[in-house]
Amino acid sequence: MEVVVGRVVKAHGLGGEVAVEVRTDEPDLRFAGDAGMTARSRDGSTRPLTVLSARRHQERLLVRFAEVPDRDTAEALRGALLLIDAGALPPTEDPDEFYDHELEGLAALLPDGTRVGTVLEVAHGPGSDLLVLKLDGGREALVPFVREIVPEVDLTARRVVIDPPEGLLES
Image (tube, rainbow, N blue to C red; front, side, top):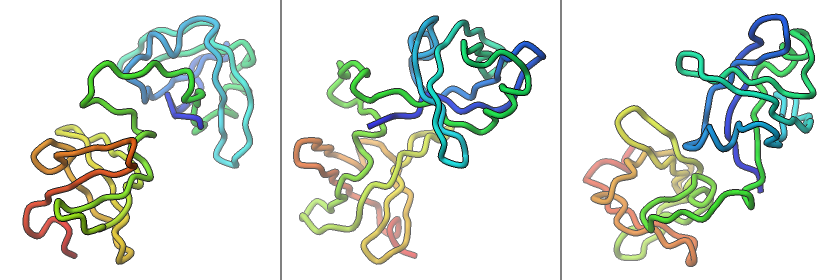
């Protein structure tokens, strides 16, 4: 399984550098020199990349890849997702901390065991993270990923228990 660590926003300058929107908590590790990753373009094609250098620029990173020698090649990467193998991620030290890919696909249950849906993804908002649920009725719902509403995450049993306030899962 691969996880997203960034998205190429645009080419930067003439020498092949790209501006990257970071999607990892460890950009210094993921974008260190010689780090390998895969770029998946919007059309679904993939290509391996090797980081030559990375530097901070405003809210993004400017990254130079060995395989991207010029602006035209960099521009062709616009919108590509940058992926690494999930097996390369270290285990989390905190029992209440999870990687997004660990939560995606988990069954969402109420405290009484009633199944309400499946976790589609984790959305990272400015205030808190949200679980995007695909409810069994077909709709989607956003559930704040806080202990008061999501009191239990059981990766082994592949489930999360949600205790939503009244109306949160209603249309």
